[in-house]
Amino acid sequence: MQLINLLKYLIRFLFLQSLIFFTTVSYFDNLVFMNAEHKFLIYLNLVEDRERFYNFVPISWITIDGLIFLLVFIFLIILYSTKFYTYVNELDFSYENRYLNDYFMLYLLWNSFIFSSLYVFRVTGLSRSNLVLFSFIVPALLIFFRNSEIISSLLGRSVSSENYISFNLDDASNYKNLRILAFRNEKLSLKSDEKVIAKKIIKEVDKLNKSTDISLVVIRLMKLKKLDPELEEYLVKLNKKVLLISDNKLKFNTNFIFRLLEVSSQKIYYFNNDIQYGAQYILKRIFDIIISIFLLILFLPLLIFSAFLIFKHDSSPVLIKQNRIGLHGKKFEMYKFRTMYKNAHKERDQLKSGSNKNSPLFKLSEDPRIITGLGPLRKYSIDELPQLINVIKGDMSLVGPRPLFEEDTELFNKNYMRRLNVLPGMTGLLQINDRNTDDFEVWYKYDLEYIENWNLRLDVEILLRTVTAVFNRKNSGK
Image 1 (cartoon, rainbow, N blue to C red):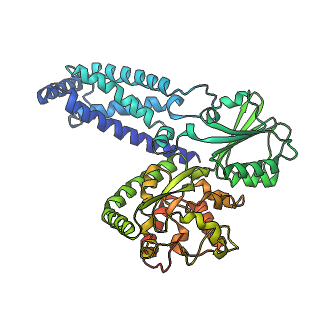
Image 2: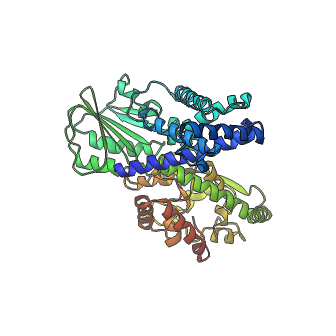
Image 3: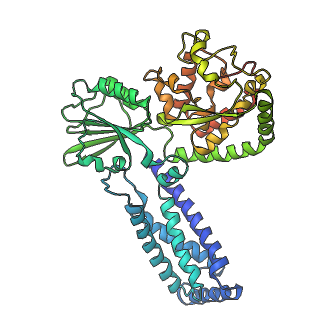
């Protein structure tokens, strides 16, 4: 685990080194140095200093770009030697958002270092107005890439918009000032006798998850010294963040990774099994956005033709919005080309007798609501292409379990609710293996297989296999 953490630090260090170095070189070359002659005079100063103070350094190493590289490297070494920048602890007590304070601190550190260094190495005669502007840029880059919170927010998952449910946590409890709670919204606070708290937690978390989005479960324990085995298994497999605040040292029935913090004789246990969170979420979102923009451009003629075809057969609207359930139970509007007659969704109750009675999902092998002549749009999933907009917005991913209607979600058991803990997708394991099945157990199998084995490589593999799967379909899908 320590090796993995060190590798993460190294990758982030190298990324920042490259980013700040190239930004600084580009800015100085274009805006700070007056002209080529001015830059050459600074180079002569460096050569003169080399002859006087460090002539052991090869002359070929003496360049202005080399100096900038060295200064950035030294600054990051100093910065990384402090916990101030490298370690953001979610279990710290935090009474306010400190982004502005942290930015000001980085501003002072960077500018005191870089300007004193420029003075020592006689890098003078620079454009002062552009230097003032430059003084704000590097601290902004440092605060932006400090951790995943800001980037995740820009990509569609803000910490301040996430919700949590708490059990036996008093409203006036100081633990609500923990960073992990302070920036999130408490959706529901419940009290329960610890003798029956296991069943209460399982019941209430599942119930709330079907009506709203929650990403964190907080439990305050006072007498218990060991978790109920069913509750422990449930929390570990929940694929959310879990915070246990206990008066006693807890004994667990199984081995799993958690963090333990002691505060005033209280034990705080924290484990994060949120699958798509932090760096993993960022990588998936960047991949989704790039590929989705490319596909929108590639399929633009097909999108225009499909819209014209729908309008010709049944006038407007050609595009519809359906309420679906997304990550952690978040509701969103999913876009589709309209291939059914108007208000077709209202006929679901009348047609349920033709759906698979052994499945909580509504699916018909021959749906009479489909507009005559538009079957190919559904057969080849062309009607799903507008969901690329949902992907760019952050409601969906290119790959993941299909987003379902709210009424479908209400029928899921506590195990299948795990499908809500990853971004819903346009395609997935089900679509490339057995898309047209109405057997709920098959849906269940493929969705959980994806959740338990998710990584970016699997997403790429599913996308590539989707291309061939589309042309092998004989029936329309959901």
